[in-house]
Length: 220
Image 1 (cartoon, rainbow, N blue to C red):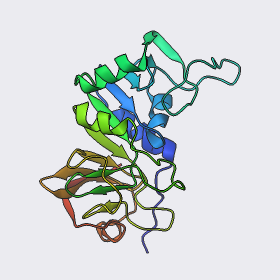
Image 2: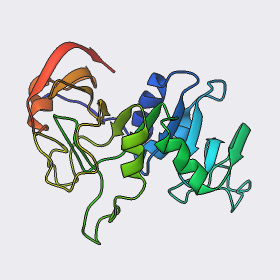
Image 3: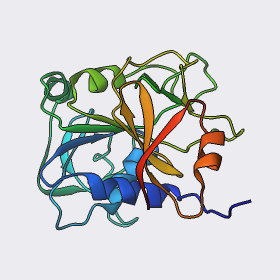
Image 4: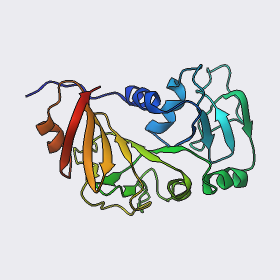
């Protein structure tokens, strides 16, 4: 069997950060996406937005520098970069609904080959038991990327032909970053753009619940 090492959550966040252009306004969802704030180089101007009313936040603070009043939407402590601001959450959602964000990076339970996103559940046992602000983000943001492990803890595929979880929105995801590959959603198909070293096309397909297309694949 081919030997490969999946990306860690921090490595995955760092890979996504590489692809975010300078000057973009970006919302980071709960989970892996929040780690992106910790790996953006200080000299790179990416303006991070949080639904609870923060614009221009930075990485998590050192343990002795925590401001208990400064948190992101996931209730995690953050810092404020020079020029950052905070405001009423109604103004924050006006930014989202007004189409002022360039990108939203979200986690997901499932993504379909048509770009359908499912990142909440109806069970109280799940960590996202309500759709929350994600429904506004995917409707109002110019681009939606997903950051997730390629499979569940039980080894079931998260990239599927059709979602079994309730949808957050249909046809909104354009790119998926997993711990195994980078995949574009194009014309109702998953098209692989990058794979981690050591993994084969055949193995990646085994871990995916829908047909993969391979075009000019690079290795991370």
